[in-house]
Length: 240
Image (tube, rainbow, N blue to C red; front, side, top):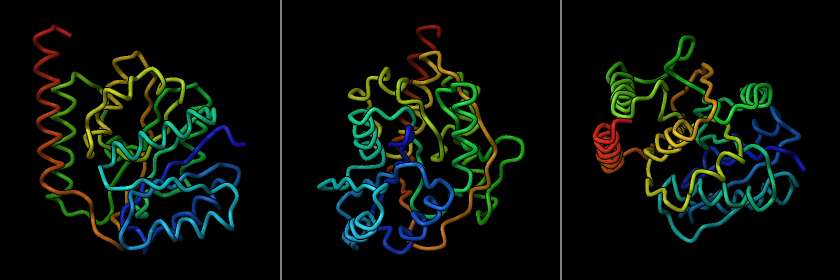
């Protein structure tokens, strides 16, 4: 068994899943993969099952309904806990993250025993392809607000391409995490930071999805703003 598990959360990713799994297997043939499917109505779960039946390192976890990115990842983390992996890798199923970078992120994590290695768009050398200037500005502004409110030095707190040490995850009291959307990524990064974890950002190129539709919507933005503001206000009042 591998010491690392790549977790791929899916909801209606039938157009891209096979290609993403192929790219992961080429880049990291000795690493296990877990697809966490939230009962996708477009048949993504069935596609994942078919792929796994031909690839012993690929596994599928079926959830009965869509409850958001956070719960899907937490289900994947608990699957990893039960099988004693040392590292988990988060990656999107839409092709936005280049699986060829997985060995690099894992190599950084293993080399310095980092608790969190983030594939970052907003550090020197990182960039985004396929986004308008307005969308890049919104993402940068959101990350800047999160850094300011949470007193963080992390440049890309919303990044979804990352490696996390399982031992650190076990300390984060996952049962108390309430974030369901992309705010989940901020909450995990913030908790690793607050727990004294070693965090490294490595530049990546993020590519806008070529198929399917984005899961981003106004509710996710509102959730993130409300939670970050609440955490930040509490932190400022507590003086930490």
